[in-house]
Image 1 (cartoon, helix red, strand yellow):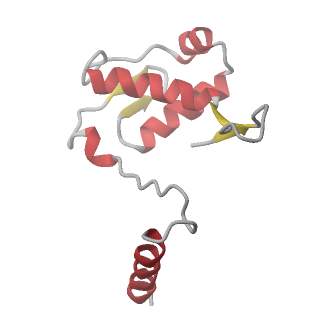
Image 2 (cartoon, one colour):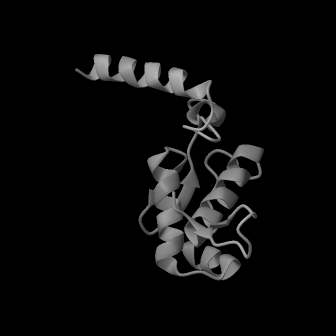
Amino acid sequence: MTEHRIKSSTEHEKPAIRRTKHREVFEHVLADIESGKLKDGERLPSEVELVKEFNSSRPTVARALHDLQNLGLVERKVGSGTYVRKARKPIESWRFGLLIPGLGSTEIFEPICGQLARLARGKCA
C-alpha cells in the first residue's frame, strides 16, 4: 500500500505519514471484517456508498476492494456486490512486519541483518 511522507515544519520533528484514500477505505473495511461488524457472507456497502462515505472517487474505492479481494477477504460478484468471504485462517496470521529503527547506525542490527542477507542469498542461489 502507498503512504506519502509530509515534510515537517522543523528539522528535528519526525515527518508525518499521511494515508492515501484507498488505504483509508481498505483499513476501514478490514477493521469491520476483523471486528465482526461485517460477518461472513454479508454484503459490503456498494462502491457508490463507500465513495460518498469517504468523499473519494470510484477508482479509489475499487482499488481498496480489489486489495481486499487479493487477500481473499472479500468476493466481488458482478452485478451483485462485494461480500465477505468465509475466513479459512485467522486474519492475524497474514500480517508480519519487522521494524528496525536506525538500521545501519546501531551496532546490534548490522551483524544480524548481514547474516540474514547471507542466509537469504544462500537459499536463492
